[in-house]
Length: 440
Image 1 (cartoon, rainbow, N blue to C red):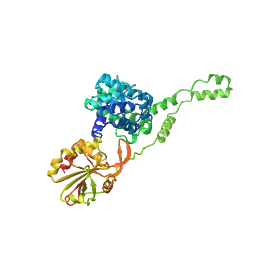
Image 2 (cartoon, rainbow, N blue to C red):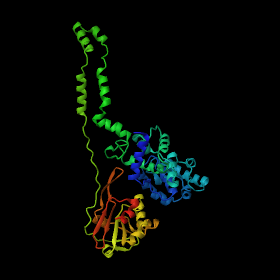
Image 3 (tube, rainbow, N blue to C red):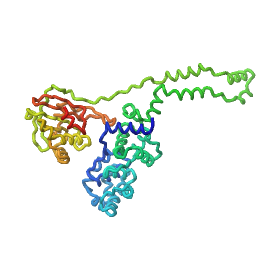
Image 4 (cartoon, one colour):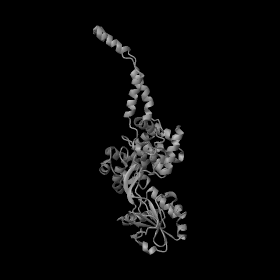
């Protein structure tokens, strides 16, 4: 396999299966992002997301942060790694941002790296996320995963960055950073990579040279030669032993030294090694939960308030075709794509007698912000007690990037004019979901 084939295979997999990949840090503007990324150095995003809400609430702008002091900031970030240094960096960064860049986060990598606490990785993250520049931020996950797969042969993060940028098409560089991070965080973990569930084994150098050779018999080609070589090495001369031994003992030593090694012994040793190797390594394929409802079933009735506080009752919609789509959470990348796709096809759906209803466990306030931000023209039901979610059996075990957990399974039900389910869509194409329904 050529290097280009490996890159093509890996990129095509992620393009198809993880079309949207973004940072897991929570932020609402460039200032919050740069603060969160500075804090995230050698610390988990999960920990940072626990710390930043209170920090951003009390220090909402660079001006407020610059007017503070490291001792005060320390009290807000004491639970992150290296809080003393990071507290100093944040205050100094805010001051430099105001005095040198008029309070605007710079877009140039060199300018970003002038800010205290901002290294090359942080600068690349900010430039790619805020300004959509084709920069590759290399953290421990990106460095490990790209080397393991065989995308790079790097000794340090800079080499890794240069090699990745050279071979990844420019339009995918920023997203590829998140692809590799998520893959390293949930599947290609540092100590015990989860190769048994990894979708990239077809292109992975580590899997083919380390995992297969360790567990499968066909790796014996190299071991056979080394075993034969080891057995056929002549024993070292026993000069000191023969000088002090008796005549009878001396003859025995001589016979041992000159006795030929039988080929049958070598073959027997190899056969024994082969027999000891595992023949098959069972791989358990994960199967996500799927609703038990099917076409032809009566749609479970419900009464739930939407983002505007209006009570939506399914029984009131008889005579209409209802698109009832369940999604995990407001403002997440894939859910946003799905909602926007339905928004773009909403006029046509309405002409065809459809009513679109979105359902998640978010509350009315979250729904209202989500609908306003993306101009969604349909109701979002605030199923906070998950009564509708459970009635339609869309809560269960799911998997994302190797992580298995319980949640809402993305599912859409088409309910006909008589309140009967006519279609159940479990293979939701988020980007084209509106068209997916129109084409039914």
